[in-house]
Picture 1: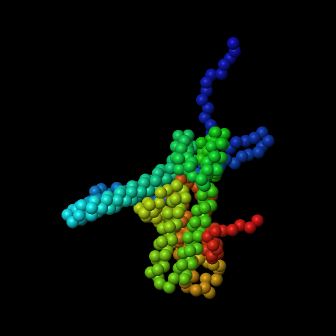
Picture 2 (picture 1 turned 60 degrees about the vertical axis):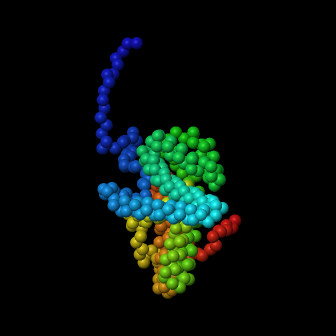
Picture 3 (picture 1 turned 45 degrees about the horizontal axis):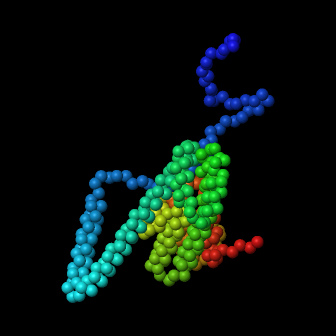
Length: 335
């Protein structure tokens, strides 16, 4: 073939020039980042060198373990000196206690590891949504399938996702589809959990006569709420992992300013001007219920494996209206 061929030429596009159409319709260009997600704001611990407190606790724990082992050994020897049968029984009971202790230690370690895994999935899923990375999307989907793939409450959502995931080319949209089919139904259940615990805290604070009992009841209800939320989203709520989750939720509230309670917020709950005519005990219960709701929302942000877009997050106002409706735990729906 013969003819004049255009030589390769580099073109520089002017970013400041607005696109124009042939019909004199001008388009306003605006910078848009789409639906980006942000990780829960939790202050990270920074290394401050050698920790003498950790050495002290470790040394005391080692001494306590040695003392317990020596005491058990002496007890078994004393029983064996009296009767061989008593010695074997004591040895069997000591072995059973040791097995139970190992099981508890393993459960605590597994609970902390599962909570750390949820944190890692949050980071990877946020990178997959914000940057549209294929590798991060594949890792996120694999991790979520291992968590929710064998649960009966997420079986329908996982089946629907597996049927349609190959039809979607964009990695970001795959994560959003998984979030809509599997995790959003869990958000509805978490809403019921938080509302139920907040109502109980409000009621218990109102009827209990002593302030010391208020602290015990509120702490117990909040810890049970954290365990339920962690189990709902795929965690393993052991004692240490629940305490760590509580610390993370409170730290998230402290960073985002969610611990501040104002008079306008309380008036939003009971009605403007009505708070002055209510009893002081109900006012205290309302404040404790609001704080429980905020702790629950923060814990859900921490436990949720896929971070939500800020515009789709549930606000506190949707929970405040339920604090004064002391319904039963089982909600009934009418057609």
